Length: 380
Image (cartoon, rainbow, N blue to C red; front, side, top):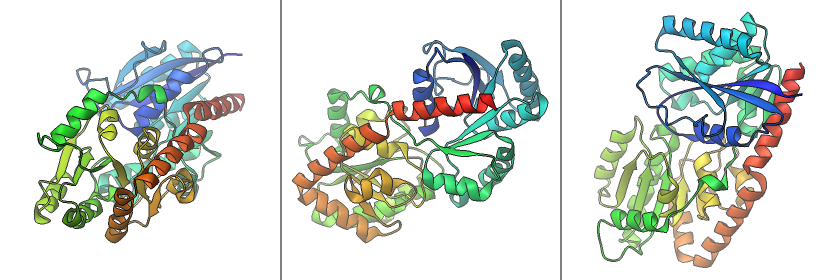
């Protein structure tokens, strides 16, 4: 029996981990088993919707619902309730805090099953406003039929903060078809990083992520300051934007490494930027299961990453990358030096990392689990 599923996601104007995972899920869910209706919540009709998956391109019914303030939020609830009735929806499947509020409302108004896919919380690394919204989200999740966690580590956090009925782990996944690498773009980026120098064969270490203090970019910059003494042609490429950007630029100036660090800003497609890196370094203080790490490994980059969240499982306890403790500048320096000095080890880790992602973090694994969860929730 085919199930009618309503998928709800808010539009934040940026294509991040949640949007990437959702795009892969919508593309791969079995259309013989599920009929999908995709609701896009947006605060402005003129605001670009390109950061969300294109329902039409995926062959999915798509509707845009405006939600700008409290009153428009009530109107959004009314419209979505009407759509649930008209389309004979069997289940609501949500992907962010605002969508979770809709899911909660529908459990009260029409008694429909609700599956909430939680892609992560910032916790103490977020602003006061963000932490307040996350606290509300945690209270709402008590009404969800099933909560999906992106990692085993995050499942424990959800379990501790919410009295959920059921929690299932669906690890973040990557779709190899999305990661098309253009060697011409990679060459252009490397030349840009080396500021037009004729020889762009120097070493580039890099990272991708929102610029806030929890990502540990400040640790990476301090490590770069030490590494530059032994490797003067060494460069650091940081892709992303966020509230900590000015602080990081100021720190780079204080450390006298502003000529060795390139802040590339936000890019919807990061593939070529990761492709331009020789090493991928993640210094986060907290993570669930970072998409950027999975994508770097799939692209064949040797990685250095802090032992947080499910990173240890992803790196197979150090067999598919070097694990370091968070906040340790010396550990970052030591790990990067080892990889620079040992090209054979770089190659071994890169190959092991790619195999690891393809075998255990493919979109097919995730979709199979999600399909099972959706059917189970509908039967309840």
